[in-house]
Image 1 (cartoon, rainbow, N blue to C red):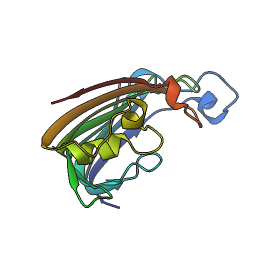
Image 2: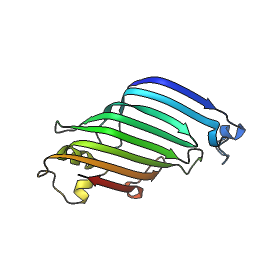
Image 3: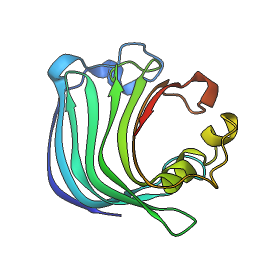
Image 4: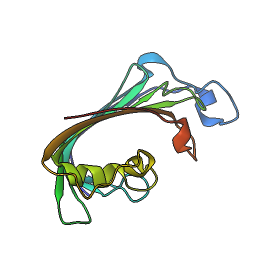
Length: 168
């Protein structure tokens, strides 16, 4: 869902780009460039994490890094609450490498603390269960910043993700 408001792409590739067996991706540096803006987009995160809708932002490729910046997203949790994602960034570092890409996520969540807890306790993360914290007694407004780094593969093991989170 959503709308692309503007897009500009430039690319230059060499023959190795068309051979997946060749370790040379066929481009480097500023051979690829993308500027895209979007509005009213919806993303479906992993597992049972609720969708985030209403996102506006940009996608860019610059210096071998793909960056997605989004603002003003909203998640509706199972209990009927709403969590706002005022800002979020996802980057793919080492973009030109065929097998060694690194994903970097940095998002901010605002809302009722129990609703934020429900999101971070969703499958496959189960943060509250692992910390042995019951969500029944959680109340008040909260803000959480979540940062994660992980290798981009077809199957990502949650144990291999490097997490940092801060809540207030």
